[in-house]
Each structure stands twice: as structure tokens, then as C-alpha cells.
Length: 304
Image (cartoon, rainbow, N blue to C red; front, side, top):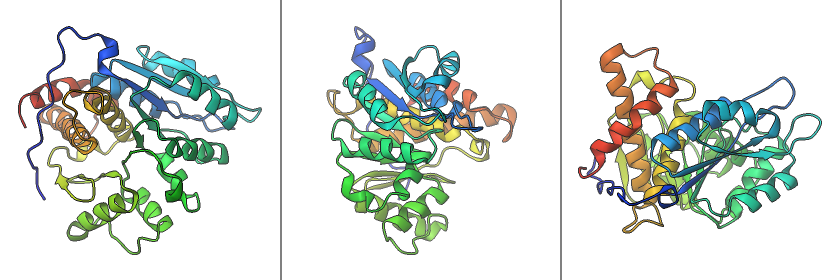
């Protein structure tokens, strides 16, 4: 397990247009009661744009969608209906997603979504439809862990991005025992067992993030304490989605989902490293991570 060579990112088609580079659908956000969360999905959308996705759709509760679009005006908004409490209405939201998201290349679900019953229904319905790869992040991971026998519902390729706490909740729900996602000698087994159990790609975040499909495992060496800030993972989820949109199944030749995820993790960490060289290891914002992504991906094009 090491910083293994990866296939280089393919060059972008010089005659391409926004339709050539895929569409990322980001589903997240909540505005129920006193809790309002719109930054997470907006940051994921920003990460997808900075990674080079041709189009980004941002599906969020209708009352907070306009504010999120001021953060990332390049995105197209999909307003999800809410009830009197501000909770998304699952059936009506599903109808909107089905109507408008058919052309998406990949979904990123979870940032800021919450773990209400309505949110859990939206997450389970998404992973049960075999329509596109899904990057399952943040609250969507917890929603899965709170759903009895969720593994039986999974029909679509998943890329899971847990930190240690999210990993433990998922592992507990799946009966994976006392696997340790933190201790260096055991982290690899923990990540691989989860990937094998779900037939998924797992990005186990932390120092030296691990990326695995259950058979092959890559340890990332970029990144450091500057990444320890809220919103960093939201950006990463969007970058993963942006690379899958461009270089996944629709590309010629395509990169595997694991390879897209590994390139995203490396670029995300490299952006933080570049910032830390100039400023130190504290005070970086998620927006600054996203800003550095294009340069770091450029260095990965044509070189491992």
C-alpha cells in the first residue's frame, strides 16, 4: 500500500463544450426548524466546477436554494419542495429529481442534508436506483447507517467518503465487528472490508486517506492539518464527482471510479499543501482548497 502510480488524467478535448464534460448533481441542504445548512452542498458544487465538470445541478430545499446559488452561481438550481416545518417532501422531491436529473453523470448526496426521516427516504431511494454512480458523503452516510438492512437496497455504484466516526456507524450497521478506522496497522483492513461488503469504492478520510475498491488500496500522501476545517470534505466530494463526470463511464477510455476518487483525493491534499507552504497549517478556507484544485489536477494530466 503506497502512493501507487495512477493512470494520468486524460487531456480535455480542445473542441469540447459543457456537454462534453459531464453533469454533477449535488443533493443536500436542510432548513427545518432552527437548523439551516446550505454551505455544504454549495461547497460540493464549487468543488465539482473547479474539477472541470461541464454542468453542475444543485438540488436543495427551496427556501435556501437562492442563497446557495449566490455562493456558486455557475450551478443550476433544482428547488426541492418542503413542508410547513421546512422538511423536504420525499415523494415530490423524488419526482423533481427524476424529471430534471436524467442527464446527470454522477450524483453527490449528503452534504448538509440532515438525517430526518425524509432525508433518509431520499438517500435510500437514490442508492436503490441503478441510474448513475453516487458519491455518498456526510449526512447521507449517517442516513444509511440509521437504515435497517440498507445494504440490500443498494443497486448503483457507490463511492463512500467516511471519516472515522461515520465509518464506525456504517460498520456497526453492517455487522462488521470491531474494525478500527484509525489505528494505522488496521485502517487498511477496515477500509477494504467495507468496500468488499458493499461492492463500493471507499475513501476513508484522515491522515493518509485510503482509497480502496476492496481489492486494490492506495494510500494518499498529500494533505495535512490545514485540511482540518469544516467544509473540506464537502469540497472533496464535489471534486470526486467532477472527475467521475468527465472521466468515468462516458469517457474514451474511461477511468475506474477508484482512479477518479484517488486523483481527487491527491489533488485536494495537494491544494492544501500548496496553501500551507505559503500560510502555515491553520486558517485555510474550503473555498481556498477549491481554488487550488485546477492547478493540482493540471499537474496530474499526463503524469502519474
